[in-house]
Image (cartoon, rainbow, N blue to C red; front, top):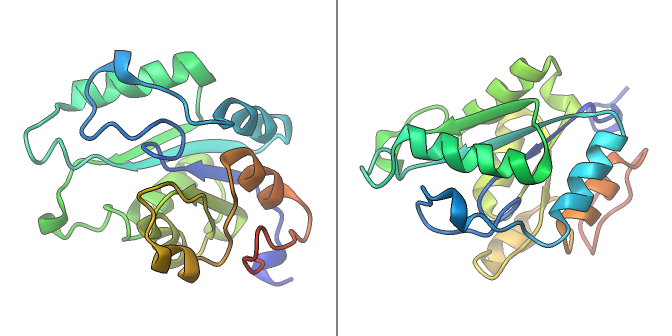
Amino acid sequence: MATDRLPIRAVLFDRDGTLVEDVPYNGDPALVRLMPTAEAAIARARGAGVRIGVVSNQSGVARGLITPAQVAAVNARIEELLGPFDAWCWCPHGPEDRCACRKPAPGLVLDACARLGVAPAEAVMIGDIGADVEAASAAGARAVLVPTPVTRLEEIDAAPRVAPDLDTAVREALAPAAAPVDGGTTA
């Protein structure tokens, strides 16, 4: 069976700009605002019985702008709003650190898959920028891009699948032998 035809057993979400509005270097839970359709998307994934996780770059820690405790507090607020996630994986490094975990490197996706007990080929990564798609590809997972105003046109053009919103991304990713989403190709 081709890996792109394996059923999805895990959905991984980028945090900022995908699940919640992107507030740069947010360390304040009071600033957390869900993205449109986030509640429906999470409910859809849970209803399908798949594991769900969050993979997020948090370079504000490396830059000294936020602390790990603040990242944890924001993550806890997201769980208050959306319910518990099966895995939280985040990178505290900056781009200059050249670590293996910071997206677009595959480390966070691989870590989340290991924590969730699924092969990368059984996971889909949903994010708002090219680094999310590249991390999924490098790890052997599928990807869906949900563009926002910060998503560059070349990232949209390069994405294997594009969805207009988070709930559509989850619905299409979980569909058997998923059809293309908004002009993308099947993953």
